Structure formats: C-alpha cells, structure tokens
Figure (spheres, rainbow over the protein chains, first blue to last red):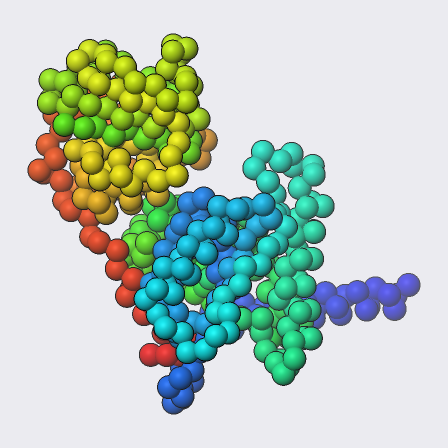
Length: 234
Length: 170
C-alpha cells in the first residue's frame, strides 16, 4: 500500500516539476537560430474558432508570407463549414498573388471535435471535452511519431490560437507533450480585437501556457506581464 | 442619401424596432436620408408585415428595404452614406475600414457585455459614435461625420514581424 502511494506521489512530483519547467521555459525568450539558411520554411497551424474568431485568425494569417510559412494547416471544429470555406478563400486569393515553388499542396484542413457546443448543457460537456482532448493528443503527439523521415519533429513549427473553447483543449494537448518531453510547436495566442479591458476566458486560461501572448488594446498590458501589444493587428 | 442598418448574424430586436420607429425615421428624413436598408438577421419585428424574407415599404418619408441575410454586406456598406450597426467587432472593423461614418448601438441584453467596452474605446479615439436605443434619434440628429477620425488601414507588417521574430527569421 505504501509502495503504491510512493509511486503515485513520485509521479505527481515528476509532473509538478516538469510543469514548472515547461511554464518557466515558455516564459523565456528563445534566441533566433544563427544563420538561418535563406530558403528556410516554417510549418504553421492556425486554429479557426468560428465566426468572428475565424475572421480575425485569417486576417492574421493573411499578413504572413505564405512562401515562408508553408505548409499551412487550418484546424477547424467539426461542422464548422464557414471557417473551412473562409480558409479556402484565403488560400485562393494568396495563390493568385504567389507562384509557389512546387506543386505540393501547400495547405490542408484538419477537423477536430468540439469541446463544447453553444447552449450545450454543462453535464454533457466533460465527455465531449475528453473526446476533443483525445483527438488533439492524436494530432499533436501520436501522429508526428509515425511521420516518415520526421522523427522528433513537432506536428508544426508554430501554432496560432485566438480562441474560443476548443483551442484551450488543443493547448492542453501541447502542454502534455511538453511535460512528457515530446517535441511541440511554438504557441502564439492573439487575444481578440473585441477584448478591450479584460481577457477572454480562453485568454485567461492560456496566459501562462503560451510562448507568446499578444493583445490588441493597451489597457490589457499589465506591468511586468508577458503580453505583447503593438496596436490593432486585424 | 442612404442609411444601412445591420445587426450581423445576431438577434437584436430593440435596434431593428428603433430603426423603423417614427422618431428615428423622421430624424433620418430631416437629416437628408431618404433611403434605409435594414439587415435584420435573426431579429423579429413586432408588426407581422415586416417579418417576410424581404420587404419594401415607404414610411415617414423614408424608403425602407428590409431583409434578413446576404452572403456579403460589402456592397450595402459601400453604397451607404451612414451605417448604423450593432457593436460586433467584425462589423465595426469592416465598416471603419471602408471609411464610412458609423453609429453603433451595443446590445445591452448580452451577458458578458464587452461590446460596450469596444464601442466606447473606439468612440474615445474618435473613430465612431456609440449610443443607446433611447438616444439613437438624438445621436443621428447631432451626428457630424466630418469630425470622425479615420481608422488606420489594415497593416499586416506588425503581425508578420512578430511571427518572423518569434520563429527566428529576423
């Protein structure tokens, strides 16, 4: 019995220590790699939350150099046809301006189950959240392990989040990855332009667990905080 | 002159009702607006006749066109001389970027009402006029579009620089 307790306690201790290091290291500014070779690309994933979140996320994505940030993965929630359509529309517009170097598909759409639907009763939320978490873990932890020729590479280099709900689950899966020591993407959270004086719930939950936390209104900048403000980004 | 009133994908009965009320319509007419296009989304109007998919009427000297949704409201915004809108951030950004004079009415029935915060923050910066259902008519009467501060155009370089820094490109 005491053996059992010791094992549980040491596991718990291990998790706490790892969690501490993971949070601590995500607070550090990572230095730029020296001499990046010129034609280097960076794979990127953008979570498209729905409605206004999707519009903002795609506005952010449209600012990026698609030649450099490639391939792109758009993560949409189950049944969100609007977001999928808008992502395709952006790719279409960008393709008319850009001549991409090869014929490889430069982007893909991935669907994950929703953590919680609007108006869903709180009782039925936990099973859906678990289902969503499992799907996210498969996406960020399991699948990259079996990717050919990409051993110990994260599922993408950079993940951009801007809420709501399901993006917290996605971030939780990445946190688990970091605790176990599996490769993980850099995570950047951009709070919505609609939040002027207080963070959204997703923002509050993810504040400590992202590598970059970006806000779009000066009142959200706390003295000594880790948020970055450089005006309206959308 | 044309006024475009919109509630986006939301339901905002009070704003829709106010827009076609006698006080607001006569104020619009007196300020030189003779046409109103009203996008009512999921809002319901008390008088049955207006709840059709599309409806066109003449009321208090203003020609009114009411409909629920269109795939894009870009054309209506571009034609309009004044836009009256709910305080959704997406609609606000779209209208301000088109350089159209904008009056917003935050929906007071929303629980976590950060619409109000966004509207007043943008009003302080001089980009738009924020008002309430009760004060809509008087706001229209005293509205001076020339005094508005133009909203800066979309600048993608700020975000791309942030990401380039993050990933070590610069």
